[in-house]
Amino acid sequence: MAPALTGPRKKDFYKLLWPYAAEMLIAVITGYITTQMLAKAGDIPAGSVGVANQVINMFYLVFQIVSNGTGIVMAQAIGARTPGLKEKISTVSILFAAIIGLVGAIIIIFLGNPILVAMNLAPELVELGTKYMLYVGAFFFTQSISFAVMQMVYSYSETKTGMIATLFADITNIGLNAILIFGVPALGIPSLGVVGAAIGTIVGRLIYFGFVMDFLFRKKHLVPNFKLLKPFPKDVAKKILKAGIPATGENITYTVAQLVIISFIALVGTHAVIAKSYFEAVVVFTYMFANCLAGATAIYVGQDVGAGDYEQAKRTAAHSLFLSVITTMIPSLILFFTVTFFGRFFTHAPQILATMQIIAVVDIFLEAGRSVCLIIGRSLKASGDAKFTLFTGLIVQWTLVVPLAYVLCFVAGLGIAGIWIAIAADECIRAVILFLRWKSGRWQTKTIVKANIDTASVL
Image 1 (cartoon, one colour):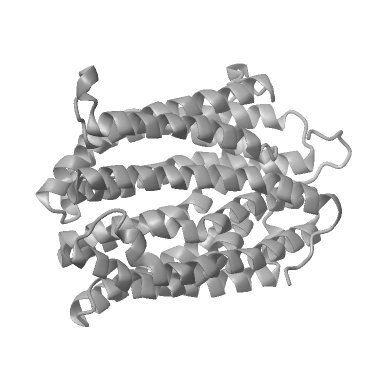
Image 2 (cartoon, helix red, strand yellow):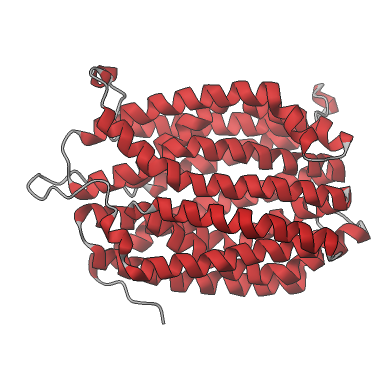
């Protein structure tokens, strides 16, 4: 049985979790529907957007250096009840997010195409993928700020706001995709394909941006006050970066490794790239709830650590870990038997469907490791022990996974199955290392914001 949560924590945990889960479900369904729409336009458009999103996600991870650092520091500040700190965190994080978003937009506009070319993709994938990235990348500024603001909102356990914002944004996204990808000749609206998907994504994210900014300003009264930047609060900026760089660095090194691995998959063939895109649109349902648990757990672990209540943090993480493993492995086993059925919603190409089935076999082991990494990894980051997760990722992914993927794929001749074995090995090895770190209790010495028990509650 799951380690029990008792008293107010149990009620509060699930009250926070269900909107988080609903938000994640809405986002996952939107991604699935978008992939289906693009698949109807052809396997190449669907595959190109899948690969482009891998590159875009790399930029998003860089933006999350600020947002993750903001979330960790804000949660600990709330738990520590430190007066005046929240306003400084809000102002500094929005400033940093705006700067990094603008830089990211400039980079992807000028270097997006060369990045896709360097991944050994077929020319047709590069052409369509570049178009998609140029449109979405031009609005990185608002997306970067959205990430930071949303983490502040989550730090207050206000997950319903994210759910409502995602609902309106994604309904708009799906509606525009249906209109713009295929066109409406009767209304004079042309078929825009991947460009239509990009426009739908942009409009949806602008709606999300408006929702979260309105909530932060009106409900929490955390309007950026740039007077607080004189003198510049170096201590706050240092705390955000100290938490955010290692916390996000692990995800960045993971994604860079994935981009290298995609270049291996591209050498296997375009069918393998497309099969990966379709499989990922389905497999996300298997670990979706674990991802929600990880987010909710990180919020409470951060608050508990800030308040100095390490035992409560342990109980919360243990409870979530049990649920994560169960809710990931059951749907993963179901997917193993049904992947071809779901694959036919995207394509009827025998080679692509066969490749998806091969991936599903190995993915069972991958998800077992991921279910642990999500909960324990996020808990360690929330406690302030993010450097450990960063260095664990760097060592495992670059000394083992990338070389192993190449050897199994090309030397051993296992193709994409070999690549997936290497990715599964990464998740499982890191799961063991992170779990042992959590059990050691060393993370309790990494608190960023110390408790201030003499001040009134800021919740």
